[in-house]
Length: 99
Image 1 (cartoon, helix red, strand yellow):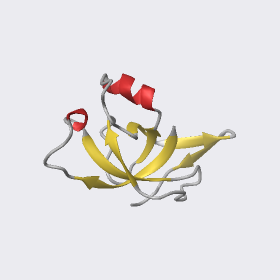
Image 2 (image 1 turned 60 degrees about the horizontal axis):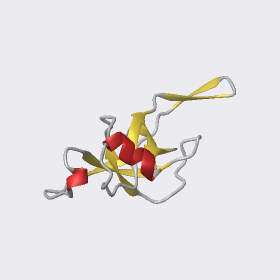
Image 3 (image 1 turned 120 degrees about the vertical axis):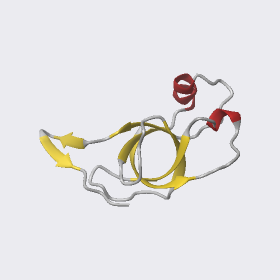
């Protein structure tokens, strides 16, 4: 799993069956300090995330298929949680990131 910032929405009028009923969001990976550390990509959302949210992204195929209950699904990234803050070495870090 890794952290990412939701930077946008992707709208598709026609989706493959495995993507139906899921919101598709544009995400950009970040490090523990909130700095970007990768290129933008897309992910299906299971956590009701929105633009500007810091999210937890799962990128392991079997786990994604298990959560989605779809053995045939072709999903590379799945948003599984919205992160409120990070606590490192006993110190809480507020995430005030902006898209």
